[in-house]
Image (cartoon, rainbow, N blue to C red; front, side, top):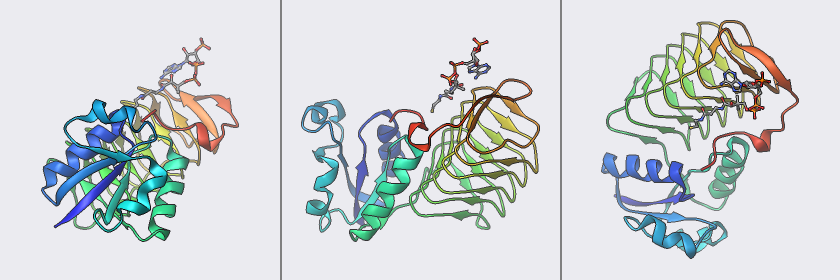
Length: 220
Ligand SMILES: CC(C)(COP(=O)(O)OP(=O)(O)OC[C@H]1O[C@@H](n2cnc3c(N)ncnc32)[C@H](O)[C@@H]1OP(=O)(O)O)[C@@H](O)C(=O)NCCC(=O)NCCS
């Protein structure tokens, strides 16, 4: 058994730590958060040990790490930094999630309760499959993708890096959603979506272009 550091003690971090705890894979789970020491009292159930740049001090005691930061681009950069620093990047699958043995979950990805990732699908580096989201067969999610709660992807959908699909969005089979895309809450995506846009509605239509990656993801 090992100990796990969760980077980011916000709401998302709380759910990540809880999912990790439910797996029983880790003896101790603790946070790093730049709000330290003020954030220590907010997460009484698990300790906040220090700020994010103090991670190397805890490597021996906490060799496993997961980044629970909602910004998709930043999450991926932090994961790369921690891998270089010698940490093992965890994959967290809540025991009430289903991940096919024929699916690939890349390092740093998390699957929350009531999610399903079906055969032949890939969740890329640092991916978030949030509560109740489903990823059907042969979907490919590039690095840093976040599917919010209740998102549903039909089979063989591709989602480009750092894209964020809002709560309850659905995507029909075989579509391609580009990089750095935001899909609004409740959208029904029925045609391909180009890179660097926001699309909303039923059916989904582009309403904004040229987003920057660092602004993406729900706040952790
Ligand atoms: C898509 C979203 C990011 C848009 O944010 P934004 O770029 O700030 O856009 P705005 O709020 O300025 O809205 C622009 C227009 O799109 C409309 N719009 C925004 N989100 C919409 C949605 N989900 N569905 C339909 N229309 C939407 C607005 O009503 C507005 O229309 P108007 O120009 O006619 O007034 C946001 O509304 C959204 O859906 N976020 C998802 C949140 C979520 O899933 N959270 C869970 C996190 S785990």
